[in-house]
Amino acid sequence: MAYEFNPRVNEDNPDPRIACVLLLDTSGSMAGEAIEELNDGFRLFTEEVSSDDLAKKRAEIEVICFGGAARVEIPFTEGRDLLPRRFGADGATPMGEAVNLAIDQLTGRKAAYRKAGLEYYRPWLFILTDGEPTDGTVFPGAALRLREVEAARGVSVFPIGVGPGANMSRLGELSAARQPVKLRGLQFREFFAWLSASLSSASASNASGSSDSAIARAETAEQIPLPPVGWAQA
Image 1 (cartoon, rainbow, N blue to C red):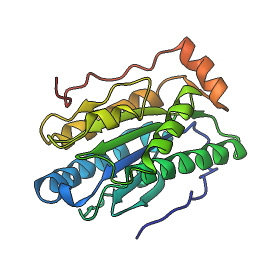
Image 2 (cartoon, rainbow, N blue to C red; image 1 turned 135 degrees about the vertical axis):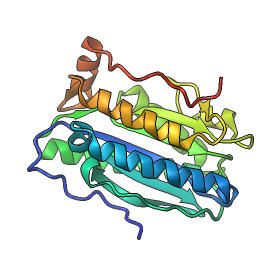
Image 3 (cartoon, rainbow, N blue to C red; image 1 turned 45 degrees about the vertical axis):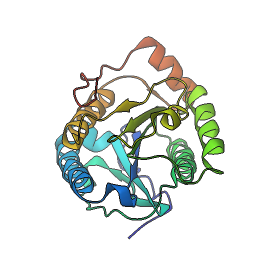
Image 4 (cartoon, rainbow, N blue to C red; image 1 turned 180 degrees about the vertical axis):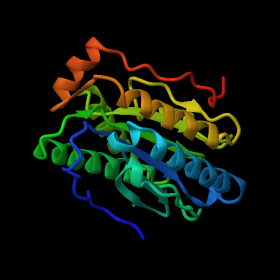
């Protein structure tokens, strides 16, 4: 079942939060081995995040799929409650629609944190795709909007290409701060293991605050240590 809302923040949990949105390309071109590897990697990710002492309380994961349409497949969920989900592959690649949806969801989630009096880390947004956007009239505006949010320190953007059909040039339009990288083969398991370890490192840092400006000050004082990247193609 798909959702397009921000579920209520668990105010019984006083820990600072790190929102992580995964934009997953589930278009028809991902059918076969690619979608199976993605599903296996995501299952591993749910197991590792839910067993990490800090990430399970502080990381909130949302999954937005874009295959035929952009939709919230898993709304923001604390790491300890994250369950595996098998994704199917079908349709075109409305990447711009998915980016706009992700920005809206993150904006709403940060507002919910502030309303609940919770500190938060700068959110992470990962875009994984094996093709290029098919919503050509929507994508340029969505990419510009994302770069503006990134420049205001409202999100960290990680564009990732999958396979030979990924348009790395279009992915490059999504971030002015970080060049897109390509997944080595179909190493989704390695990527999700790295992501889990990265969320653990971020959750243990002091780079949180009650607003984006407060986070910027915290990040200036402390660089979040991330594990080495082993899943990216050189």
